[in-house]
Amino acid sequence: MDMRQVDIIVPCYNEEKNIARLFGETNAAVAEIADCRFCYIFVDDGSIDGTLDEIRKLAGGHDNVKYISLSRNFGKESAMYAGIRNSKGELALIMDADLQHPPALIPEMVRRIDETGCDCCAARRVTRKGEPRIRSFGARMFYKLMNRYSDIQLADGAVDFRLMSRRMVKAICSMPERQRFSKGIFAWVGFRTEWIEFENVRRLEGESKWSAFGLVKYALDGFLDFAASPLKFVGAFGCLVTVGSALYFIIEIVKTLVMGKDIPGYASLLCLILFFGGLAVAILSLLGEYMGRIYMETKGRPVYIEKESNIDED
Ligand code: UDP
Ligand code: MG
Image (cartoon, rainbow, N blue to C red; front, side, top):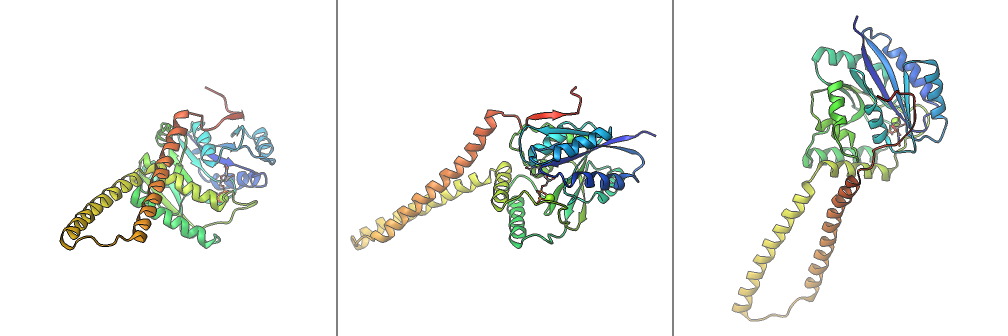
């Protein structure tokens, strides 16, 4: 029988305690899939614990374990990209190292792709149990804003746990941007995606790497990466203010001609000056956000730097 290769890409940052378990549980879960050969691509994202040693140990004992170790911590986005770049299988799967993405779903994902002929099967969390309220609220707001004002539609609760066809992987690799927001990229490249739902699972060992500040930055970056609408909004607002003040100007002229001069209101004048001064700075800083992104993109720095790997170059 023709065996398809499925690459399991696992970004790892300080996951020494999880790697062996992840490997064991995933192997057990995929054993029932007869027509696929599974290959692991662990990406050590500059871990400072024993993660790389754990990965090397696995690679020493198993031919199907490949790894790439990055020269420092580049972030999950870069680690996923490193994995995807090195994937050559007919299918590629991305999953977290902390077992928050249940390996038991993998057979169902493969089946869905086979049955429906779609290019991607992705997982969606239906509950956010065990997560701080404020984080869930922030996430909901983010999806609302994103779907309304950006170029792409994101599924609420979608996680970076997805199985993709080779042609979808190629499409993702062909996107040249360096500041990568994968959730957006997955949506942007198109292809039909099937969703499977699962309940939130707590991470096995260690802690989430996300700080509140980090999440807000991630959301903002993601939004600005796929939306030019704030610029249009600012333009529309400027027009509105111009038209409004022109009308006001006419009213004032008429009033002066008909009723003579009245005493000017300094307080209201001051308020307006301060208000529009503040607004101008805010709008400038919005432009600055886009400019900063253009600046970083034009540098053309690589998304990640590889330090060590057991994957043959070709
Ligand atoms: N991760 C990574 N680089 C980072 C941060 C995280 O490769 O800089 C990996 C991490 O090892 C895990 C996955 O990304 O496999 C998800 O990270 P985490 O569990 O901290 O995020 P959460 O599940 O809370 O969204
Ligand atoms: Mg996690």
